[in-house]
Image (tube, one colour):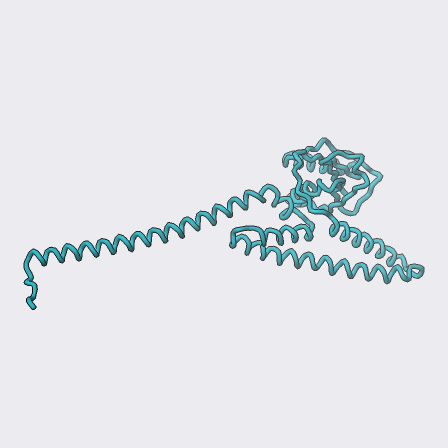
Length: 257
């Protein structure tokens, strides 16, 4: 068996082949890394795009129905819905955490409602022996139960209305007129229609009230409440469906104590 003689030509050929193999390996590794990185980046962009699309889908009503909504039942339903249907895992986790918070709030309302009903039943069972203070407590407990039940029965409404809310402002004493006018100006600057103020001396209130008359106007009432709170004006919201046939869509009343 004869050994191949190593010549300069053979050595050069092997070196070139080695260089070629090295370059080929480098190209393959670079191609694989490029594909992997492109896939990761593409996935990241698609996940981000999906998140942005999701935000665009519910941004048009999330503020009204979640941030400005006082009803924990409806916030709980929305949080539960989004925690399951949103494609983005990161956003789903956020909604799951939010659901836990509003579920605690909702559970607390149910507990308070149960306690109020129990106290009310005990007092009513012995109504003939009630003192004046106990009779007042019955009235307050009944109002609390009625408000809780209204809230729990209230449907979740996504308003598509383009009607600009109109706020009518009532005040109970002449010395309040300047303050009422100041509030009117602020409301108007916030985008509401505010056609004027009215003195109603026959009505005396212990709290400021926002009154609304249709289910669809709850979002506007909540928005107004939030805006007034920024002006350090606390109000309670009251639903008065019995007057819906006498008012137009988007009508709100602000009653100042």
